[in-house]
Length: 220
Image 1 (cartoon, rainbow, N blue to C red):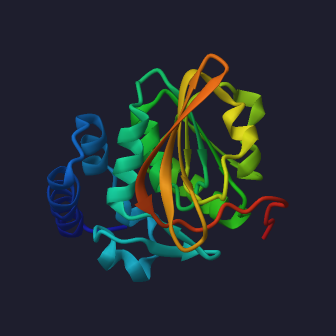
Image 2: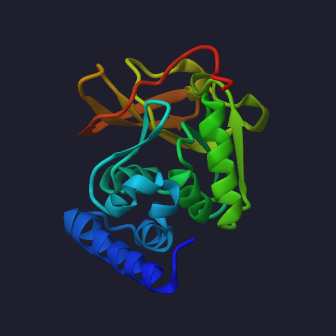
């Protein structure tokens, strides 16, 4: 656990991150900015990388996965225009950092992670830090989580070549999904909106994510 001076230093780094990396680059949703300011990103990162916790780039978290750069996370959250009453599905729990942010912006968060080791670690970190309105599940994220559908919003933290039909089918009427789509080298964020039985897709900013893997979960 960090000492009081260390926590004060991390708080200063978070403030600089929000002002220099997010607000100055066009992130204007005050709820998203406040959540980013409150959430201790360093707690979701392996010890050896904590010195880079508030830098604007992804970091490894194990199992070949990464925690996304703060700007991309904020961009995705802002695109979803979350309301406090929303039920959200997250595909790709990873370290649990985005899960923690979602928990502050929505009423309920269901997060699916295919790596049992990451799921276990994220669940422990989230519980230790007091994020109680989240449920972390081990499973194939491309299939979503039908037991809690429909969702007002879906955030996908892994790239796919095309929109997974199972995820689109779990959106509520008026629901939104943000997902990176494209080849492994580079993708673009796609904002998918459900209007009745019709999907509207808006292609947004370029990005680069680890691939969304379809199939059996990793038990160990």
